[in-house]
Amino acid sequence: MDHLTPERQLFIASGIGDDQQVQWLLDTYPNLDVNWKDHTEDNPEEKTSLHVACQKGHHEVVKILLTHQGISLNLLSKGRATAFYVACAVKDSIDCVRLLVADPRCDVNARAPRGRTPIRQAADRGCVETIKCLILSGRILDLGPEGDKETDPIMHVQNKLEKAYDKPLNSQKPNYIEIRNLLVKFKRDPEGTRRDLRKEQPSVLFALVVFECDGLLKTRDNTPADRFSRFFRIAHELPLELQRLLCNRVFGWAAADISQVYSEVAFHRLTKREREEDKKRASS
Image (tube, rainbow, N blue to C red; front, side, top):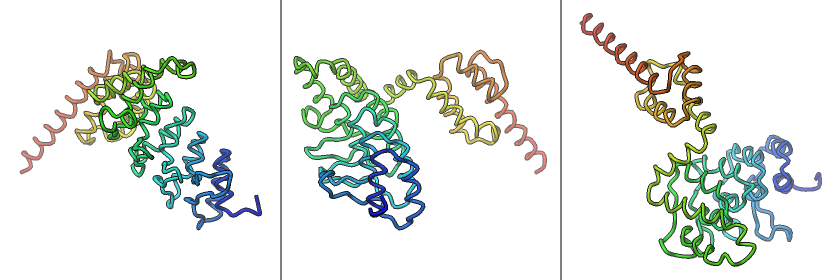
């Protein structure tokens, strides 16, 4: 690819998932335009490197591109779609979706033509895991005008189910039913839906709790009260066997569940504050 510009090389490497080449290009050409759009006949949609990496599900490439200070996450292709919108429409791009939705620079509600949002597009393609990922992210999600078959994902999926006589669509019917029910529940009770989804993913939740507790353990007595409470609130949603494992990992206790640990640690923190207050009063 020596005869090609660095931007063109980056675009090709991103499309084939060559993360080492992508990293080398970004390191070698600091002034490279990471947002360059390909205008060749092979890319009539004029997508960026981020677009094609998301379209092909190359999450390692996406991860590298996101670290570049010049990256623009919300650039539109000729078809007026963001990279996030593209990722939400492809089942194999779920890891790309996770990376993008966690980035505060990403507009998770950027509309494509006809007012279609990323979550509507995920629903259209039957991407159940993508829908769950978006809900679990905690981001505010635009479900569009209620009752609009084109923009409202619930109505759009319901419309598809009513046409399920079509054989290709019929194979997707279970996914569409799950998506419809999930979105209806989410619209009615967002926090309750997120809580139930977390319970379906104990390994992910356990990783989150461990991440929280690694810092908590080092400064247990001085940890802000809101973080302290949040840690135990999340941990309490774990299955009992994981709660016990967590108790042993963090506190070295063979507790029955996390509630017992919470009571003991909360008492320890309270008595420590009281002792410190007694010392202050005694010295004044």
